Each structure stands twice: as structure tokens, then as C-alpha cells.
Amino acid sequence: MSTGNFDNWDGNVLDLGPLYPFVGSEGLMVVVLVVLWAAWHIAQMVGENRALEDRVKHLKQAGELQKAVESERVIERM
Image (cartoon, rainbow, N blue to C red; front, side, top):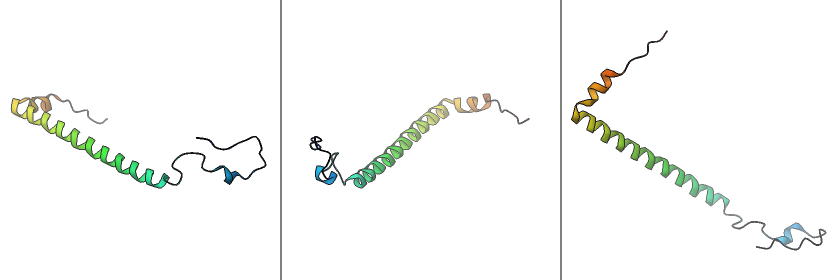
């Protein structure tokens, strides 16, 4: 992509044209990225919750959940 001829600096900067691609679409890109960011967080939370529920279900079936909870030591405040 050419940004113009810089041999003569006595010209109008506006005559050069856009200096980077997709000029004017920054707002749309921000909206798309915010939507993708939110969707990724939602998908991450759903996946982690599903994995946690599966793990708790497995521990409950094996009777290990109560043992794991009882083996935890509570740190008392000083």
C-alpha cells in the first residue's frame, strides 16, 4: 500500500489518502471484538462449571466428597 510520494513535503496531507486499511471501520471492529470477548467469557464459564459439576458428581458417587471436605483444615483467625 502506497502512502504517497514524500519527495516534496510542501503538499496537503489530506491528498495522501488513508494511511492504514479499513479507515472508518474502527467502531464496528470494537463492537465485534467486545461481542467476541463476552462470548468467550460465557463459553469459558459454562465449560468450567460443567467440569466442576462432573467432578463433584464423581466425588459424590464414590463417597469421596465427604472425606475430602472433612480432611480440610480450617485456618482460624488470630
